[in-house]
Amino acid sequence: MYKKDSKEKNERREEPLWMRKNLELLMQRNKIPEDIFNKIFHNEIIPLQSMQMHIEHYYKPKSEEDIRRIDRIMSNLCLNKNDKVLDIGCGTGTFVYHTSKLCSMAIGIDYSIGSVKRASEINKKFITNGKRYFVCADLKAIPLKESIFDKIVAADIIEHLSKRQKLFVFKEVYRVMKKEGVLVIGTPNGLLVKFSYFLMKLKTVKAKILGGDFPRPDITTASHIGLTDIFELKKLARNRYTVKTKYFIDNIPFISRRLGRFPNIISFLTNLLKKIPLIRDFFTTYIMMVMKKI
Image (cartoon, rainbow, N blue to C red; front, side, top):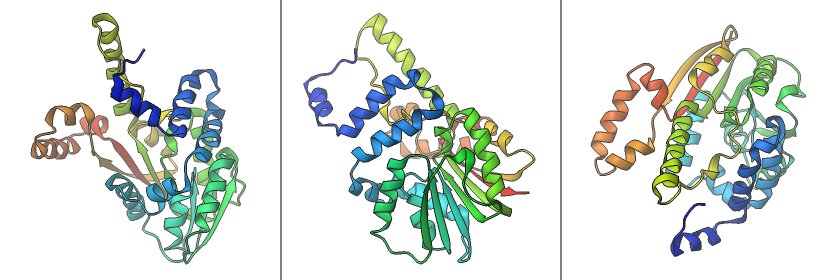
Protein backbone atom coordinates (compact mmCIF):
# COMPACT_ATOMS: atom_id res chain seq x y z
CA MET A 1 0.00 0.00 0.00
CA TYR A 2 0.92 3.67 -0.40
CA LYS A 3 3.16 4.63 2.54
CA LYS A 4 2.33 7.79 4.46
CA ASP A 5 4.12 9.66 7.18
CA SER A 6 2.10 11.51 9.84
CA LYS A 7 1.93 14.69 7.76
CA GLU A 8 0.60 12.83 4.72
CA LYS A 9 -2.01 11.09 6.88
CA ASN A 10 -3.27 14.44 8.12
CA GLU A 11 -3.45 15.80 4.58
CA ARG A 12 -5.37 12.71 3.53
CA ARG A 13 -7.94 13.20 6.30
CA GLU A 14 -8.39 16.83 5.26
CA GLU A 15 -9.17 16.00 1.64
CA PRO A 16 -12.72 16.99 0.68
CA LEU A 17 -15.37 14.32 0.29
CA TRP A 18 -15.49 14.66 -3.50
CA MET A 19 -11.78 13.78 -3.78
CA ARG A 20 -12.24 10.67 -1.66
CA LYS A 21 -15.22 9.69 -3.81
CA ASN A 22 -13.07 10.31 -6.89
CA LEU A 23 -10.49 7.82 -5.66
CA GLU A 24 -13.20 5.30 -4.80
CA LEU A 25 -14.61 5.50 -8.35
CA LEU A 26 -11.13 5.26 -9.83
CA MET A 27 -10.69 1.91 -8.09
CA GLN A 28 -13.99 0.70 -9.63
CA ARG A 29 -13.39 1.97 -13.16
CA ASN A 30 -12.55 -1.39 -14.72
CA LYS A 31 -15.75 -2.91 -13.30
CA ILE A 32 -18.11 -0.39 -14.92
CA PRO A 33 -18.83 -0.29 -18.70
CA GLU A 34 -17.00 2.63 -20.35
CA ASP A 35 -20.12 4.06 -21.96
CA ILE A 36 -21.82 4.69 -18.61
CA PHE A 37 -18.85 5.27 -16.29
CA ASN A 38 -18.68 9.03 -16.81
CA LYS A 39 -22.41 9.48 -16.33
CA ILE A 40 -22.14 7.75 -12.95
CA PHE A 41 -18.93 9.61 -12.13
CA HIS A 42 -20.25 13.14 -12.71
CA ASN A 43 -23.67 12.48 -11.19
CA GLU A 44 -21.93 11.46 -7.96
CA ILE A 45 -18.99 13.91 -7.91
CA ILE A 46 -20.57 17.22 -8.96
CA PRO A 47 -23.12 17.44 -6.09
CA LEU A 48 -20.26 16.91 -3.61
CA GLN A 49 -18.39 19.95 -4.93
CA SER A 50 -19.37 23.40 -3.71
CA MET A 51 -20.94 25.96 -6.01
CA GLN A 52 -18.25 28.43 -4.97
CA MET A 53 -15.56 26.02 -6.13
CA HIS A 54 -17.08 25.90 -9.62
CA ILE A 55 -17.41 29.66 -9.76
CA GLU A 56 -13.77 30.20 -8.76
CA HIS A 57 -12.50 27.63 -11.26
CA TYR A 58 -14.76 28.17 -14.26
CA TYR A 59 -16.75 31.43 -14.03
CA LYS A 60 -14.49 33.86 -12.21
CA PRO A 61 -11.20 31.93 -12.35
CA LYS A 62 -8.40 32.90 -10.02
CA SER A 63 -5.58 30.53 -10.94
CA GLU A 64 -3.33 31.14 -13.93
CA GLU A 65 -4.09 27.64 -15.23
CA ASP A 66 -7.89 28.17 -15.20
CA ILE A 67 -7.62 31.62 -16.79
CA ARG A 68 -5.31 30.27 -19.50
CA ARG A 69 -7.68 27.41 -20.34
CA ILE A 70 -10.67 29.72 -20.84
CA ASP A 71 -8.68 32.32 -22.79
CA ARG A 72 -7.36 29.70 -25.23
CA ILE A 73 -10.80 28.40 -26.12
CA MET A 74 -12.42 31.83 -26.34
CA SER A 75 -9.68 33.36 -28.48
CA ASN A 76 -10.02 30.57 -31.05
CA LEU A 77 -13.83 30.76 -31.31
CA CYS A 78 -13.69 34.28 -32.81
CA LEU A 79 -17.30 34.95 -31.83
CA ASN A 80 -19.69 37.33 -33.55
CA LYS A 81 -22.71 38.87 -31.82
CA ASN A 82 -25.16 36.88 -33.99
CA ASP A 83 -23.47 33.51 -33.49
CA LYS A 84 -25.29 30.56 -32.00
CA VAL A 85 -22.98 28.42 -29.86
CA LEU A 86 -23.23 24.83 -28.62
CA ASP A 87 -21.06 23.63 -25.74
CA ILE A 88 -20.93 19.81 -25.81
CA GLY A 89 -20.15 18.10 -22.53
CA CYS A 90 -20.77 21.49 -20.95
CA GLY A 91 -20.25 20.26 -17.38
CA THR A 92 -21.18 23.07 -15.02
CA GLY A 93 -21.64 25.57 -17.86
CA THR A 94 -18.26 27.30 -18.19
CA PHE A 95 -18.39 28.15 -21.87
CA VAL A 96 -22.13 28.68 -22.04
CA TYR A 97 -21.55 31.56 -19.64
CA HIS A 98 -18.42 32.98 -21.30
CA THR A 99 -19.67 32.71 -24.90
CA SER A 100 -23.11 34.14 -24.09
CA LYS A 101 -21.42 37.43 -23.21
CA LEU A 102 -20.38 37.76 -26.86
CA CYS A 103 -23.02 35.94 -28.93
CA SER A 104 -26.80 35.81 -29.35
CA MET A 105 -27.41 32.35 -27.87
CA ALA A 106 -25.48 29.58 -26.16
CA ILE A 107 -26.71 26.08 -25.38
CA GLY A 108 -24.94 23.60 -23.12
CA ILE A 109 -25.58 19.87 -23.40
CA ASP A 110 -24.43 17.19 -20.98
CA TYR A 111 -25.71 13.73 -20.10
CA SER A 112 -25.03 14.21 -16.39
CA ILE A 113 -28.13 15.55 -14.67
CA GLY A 114 -25.91 16.59 -11.74
CA SER A 115 -23.80 18.79 -14.03
CA VAL A 116 -26.79 20.34 -15.80
CA LYS A 117 -28.52 21.18 -12.51
CA ARG A 118 -25.39 22.83 -11.15
CA ALA A 119 -24.83 24.74 -14.43
CA SER A 120 -28.38 26.13 -14.31
CA GLU A 121 -28.01 27.14 -10.66
CA ILE A 122 -24.74 28.99 -11.22
CA ASN A 123 -25.85 30.71 -14.44
CA LYS A 124 -28.80 32.27 -12.64
CA LYS A 125 -26.27 34.22 -10.59
CA PHE A 126 -24.67 35.89 -13.64
CA ILE A 127 -26.17 38.26 -16.21
CA THR A 128 -25.06 38.14 -19.86
CA ASN A 129 -26.29 39.60 -23.15
CA GLY A 130 -27.04 36.32 -24.91
CA LYS A 131 -29.68 33.74 -24.15
CA ARG A 132 -28.56 30.61 -22.28
CA TYR A 133 -30.08 27.15 -22.16
CA PHE A 134 -29.05 23.76 -20.78
CA VAL A 135 -30.10 20.36 -22.05
CA CYS A 136 -29.58 17.00 -20.35
CA ALA A 137 -29.08 14.53 -23.19
CA ASP A 138 -26.64 12.04 -24.67
CA LEU A 139 -24.24 13.52 -27.21
CA LYS A 140 -24.68 10.41 -29.37
CA ALA A 141 -28.19 11.68 -30.20
CA ILE A 142 -28.31 15.48 -29.81
CA PRO A 143 -32.01 16.44 -29.62
CA LEU A 144 -31.64 19.51 -31.86
CA LYS A 145 -32.27 20.27 -35.54
CA GLU A 146 -29.46 20.14 -38.07
CA SER A 147 -27.36 23.09 -39.25
CA ILE A 148 -28.16 25.38 -36.28
CA PHE A 149 -24.82 26.35 -34.76
CA ASP A 150 -22.07 28.67 -35.99
CA LYS A 151 -19.58 27.60 -33.30
CA ILE A 152 -19.28 24.47 -31.20
CA VAL A 153 -17.07 24.08 -28.12
CA ALA A 154 -15.62 20.72 -27.08
CA ALA A 155 -13.45 21.75 -24.13
CA ASP A 156 -12.06 18.87 -22.09
CA ILE A 157 -14.79 16.44 -23.17
CA ILE A 158 -13.04 14.24 -25.75
CA GLU A 159 -10.93 12.47 -23.10
CA HIS A 160 -14.15 11.45 -21.33
CA LEU A 161 -15.47 9.53 -24.37
CA SER A 162 -14.76 5.96 -25.43
CA LYS A 163 -13.68 5.37 -29.04
CA ARG A 164 -17.17 4.22 -29.91
CA GLN A 165 -18.73 7.32 -28.36
CA LYS A 166 -16.35 9.64 -30.25
CA LEU A 167 -17.53 8.29 -33.61
CA PHE A 168 -21.17 9.01 -32.79
CA VAL A 169 -20.44 12.40 -31.25
CA PHE A 170 -18.43 13.62 -34.25
CA LYS A 171 -21.29 12.65 -36.58
CA GLU A 172 -23.82 14.50 -34.43
CA VAL A 173 -21.64 17.60 -34.11
CA TYR A 174 -21.26 17.69 -37.89
CA ARG A 175 -25.04 17.38 -38.31
CA VAL A 176 -26.02 20.29 -36.04
CA MET A 177 -23.27 22.62 -37.30
CA LYS A 178 -23.83 25.13 -40.10
CA LYS A 179 -21.76 24.96 -43.26
CA GLU A 180 -18.36 26.54 -42.60
CA GLY A 181 -19.14 26.41 -38.89
CA VAL A 182 -16.24 26.04 -36.47
CA LEU A 183 -15.56 23.35 -33.87
CA VAL A 184 -12.92 24.14 -31.23
CA ILE A 185 -11.52 21.13 -29.38
CA GLY A 186 -9.28 21.28 -26.32
CA THR A 187 -7.98 18.12 -24.67
CA PRO A 188 -4.93 16.76 -22.80
CA ASN A 189 -2.42 14.96 -25.00
CA GLY A 190 -3.06 11.27 -24.45
CA LEU A 191 0.43 10.25 -25.60
CA LEU A 192 2.11 12.27 -22.87
CA VAL A 193 -0.40 11.32 -20.17
CA LYS A 194 -0.04 7.61 -20.95
CA PHE A 195 3.74 7.97 -20.79
CA SER A 196 3.36 9.55 -17.34
CA TYR A 197 1.22 6.56 -16.29
CA PHE A 198 3.97 4.26 -17.57
CA LEU A 199 6.57 6.07 -15.42
CA MET A 200 4.27 5.70 -12.41
CA LYS A 201 4.04 1.95 -12.99
CA LEU A 202 7.85 1.73 -13.14
CA LYS A 203 8.07 3.56 -9.81
CA THR A 204 5.51 1.15 -8.33
CA VAL A 205 7.56 -1.86 -9.48
CA LYS A 206 10.71 -0.26 -8.07
CA ALA A 207 8.99 0.32 -4.72
CA LYS A 208 7.84 -3.33 -4.58
CA ILE A 209 11.32 -4.68 -5.31
CA LEU A 210 13.58 -2.20 -3.53
CA GLY A 211 11.18 -0.77 -0.97
CA GLY A 212 10.29 2.84 -0.46
CA ASP A 213 7.19 4.96 -0.95
CA PHE A 214 4.65 3.95 -3.55
CA PRO A 215 3.59 6.68 -5.99
CA ARG A 216 0.19 8.05 -5.12
CA PRO A 217 -2.59 7.40 -7.69
CA ASP A 218 -3.60 10.35 -9.85
CA ILE A 219 -7.20 10.86 -8.74
CA THR A 220 -7.80 13.90 -10.96
CA THR A 221 -8.24 11.83 -14.12
CA ALA A 222 -10.52 9.01 -12.97
CA SER A 223 -13.04 9.85 -15.69
CA HIS A 224 -10.50 10.12 -18.53
CA ILE A 225 -11.49 6.85 -20.21
CA GLY A 226 -10.74 8.05 -23.74
CA LEU A 227 -7.42 9.91 -23.72
CA THR A 228 -6.66 10.83 -27.29
CA ASP A 229 -3.88 12.29 -29.42
CA ILE A 230 -3.40 14.49 -32.47
CA PHE A 231 -3.41 11.55 -34.88
CA GLU A 232 -6.76 10.17 -33.68
CA LEU A 233 -8.39 13.60 -33.81
CA LYS A 234 -7.19 14.20 -37.37
CA LYS A 235 -8.57 10.82 -38.37
CA LEU A 236 -11.97 11.69 -36.88
CA ALA A 237 -11.98 14.99 -38.79
CA ARG A 238 -10.96 13.50 -42.15
CA ASN A 239 -13.16 14.48 -45.12
CA ARG A 240 -15.42 16.56 -42.87
CA TYR A 241 -13.31 19.47 -41.64
CA THR A 242 -10.26 21.52 -42.44
CA VAL A 243 -8.00 21.34 -39.39
CA LYS A 244 -5.65 23.79 -37.72
CA THR A 245 -3.68 22.38 -34.78
CA LYS A 246 -2.21 24.42 -31.94
CA TYR A 247 0.35 23.07 -29.52
CA PHE A 248 0.70 24.06 -25.85
CA ILE A 249 3.52 22.81 -23.66
CA ASP A 250 2.75 24.13 -20.20
CA ASN A 251 4.40 21.70 -17.83
CA ILE A 252 6.16 18.40 -18.41
CA PRO A 253 6.54 16.95 -14.89
CA PHE A 254 9.56 14.74 -15.50
CA ILE A 255 11.42 17.72 -17.02
CA SER A 256 10.19 20.41 -14.59
CA ARG A 257 11.19 18.34 -11.54
CA ARG A 258 14.77 18.13 -12.75
CA LEU A 259 15.15 21.63 -14.15
CA GLY A 260 12.78 23.58 -11.90
CA ARG A 261 15.57 25.87 -10.74
CA PHE A 262 16.40 26.84 -14.33
CA PRO A 263 13.27 28.49 -15.85
CA ASN A 264 15.23 29.89 -18.80
CA ILE A 265 16.35 26.39 -19.80
CA ILE A 266 12.78 25.07 -19.47
CA SER A 267 11.51 27.94 -21.65
CA PHE A 268 14.20 27.24 -24.27
CA LEU A 269 13.38 23.52 -24.36
CA THR A 270 9.65 24.22 -24.58
CA ASN A 271 10.06 26.54 -27.57
CA LEU A 272 12.41 24.05 -29.21
CA LEU A 273 10.03 21.11 -28.77
CA LYS A 274 7.16 23.05 -30.36
CA LYS A 275 9.14 23.36 -33.60
CA ILE A 276 10.00 19.70 -34.13
CA PRO A 277 7.24 17.56 -35.75
CA LEU A 278 6.50 14.21 -34.07
CA ILE A 279 8.55 15.24 -31.03
CA ARG A 280 6.13 18.16 -30.65
CA ASP A 281 3.16 15.80 -31.04
CA PHE A 282 4.43 13.73 -28.13
CA PHE A 283 5.49 16.46 -25.68
CA THR A 284 2.49 18.74 -26.19
CA THR A 285 0.61 18.84 -22.89
CA TYR A 286 -2.60 20.33 -24.28
CA ILE A 287 -3.93 19.90 -27.80
CA MET A 288 -6.18 22.47 -29.39
CA MET A 289 -7.76 21.91 -32.78
CA VAL A 290 -9.82 24.40 -34.71
CA MET A 291 -11.95 22.49 -37.23
CA LYS A 292 -13.94 24.22 -39.97
CA LYS A 293 -16.79 22.29 -41.54
CA ILE A 294 -16.30 21.62 -45.24
